[in-house]
Each structure stands twice: as C-alpha cells, then as structure tokens.
Length: 162
Image (cartoon, rainbow, N blue to C red; front, side, top):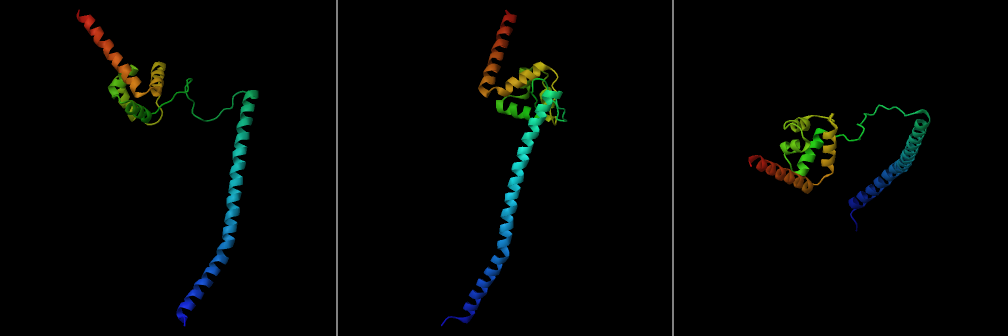
C-alpha cells in the first residue's frame, strides 16, 4: 500500500506545475511576440539608415557637401593616438630613442606622444608619412632598416677618421 504522504506530495507537485505552466505560457507567447517586434524594428532602422545615407550622398552631389560635426582627419586620412604609438613601438620591438631616430624627431618627443591622451596633432607631413609607413611594416623590416642605418653610420665615421 502506497504511503498517503507521498501520494499527496506528488499530487501537490503536479498541481503546482500545472498552475505555474498556466501562468507562464501567456508570458512566453508575449515574450516571443516582443522579440519578433524588436527584430522587425531593428531591420526597419537599418533600412532607414541606409536610405538616409543614400539621400545624404545624393544631396551632397546636388547641393554640395553635407556638413556634419564629425572630427576631420588630415588630407591623407592618417591619424594616430599616443596609445597606438606605444603599441606600434612594442610590436616593432624598438625603443623610444630608436623610434625617434627613425622618425627624425627629438628623443623625448616619443615619450610625450605616448603619454598624451587622444589623437596626436602631427603637423609635419614627413613625420605623418614616416609613422604611416612604420604602421604598415613588420618587425623584421624595421630591424633591417635599423641595421642599414647602423652600417651607414659606421661607414661614415670611418671615412671621417681617414
């Protein structure tokens, strides 16, 4: 003969599950409908943004450039931050002094750049070009360039002594 307490517990569990299911089912349905609505809204926003860009470009062709408040880059499109200079230097495996010599600037300017927040205001186009070139180089290429620079320096010293 089964224990009446266990039978009652099982029946209470079954009824509780049924009540919970009856309460949660409408919530699941409404949640699914809301997720679908959010998806549709995201899709509409994306389509509207594309259309907005297309119309802005069309307007720019007809009436001149569209003005926005975005910060302007220099004419070559190159910009760099102090954090990126530090990252570049560590990726290339060179010291601040070596980087300064490669760029043709004072030794301490690289340290100043690395500690400066935000974009760097590089006014000399030669430095901008050199940094841009270094950004595209690999470690081995930079080390070869440094070795060639060292060889060129030692040769010039020997010529001066003779």
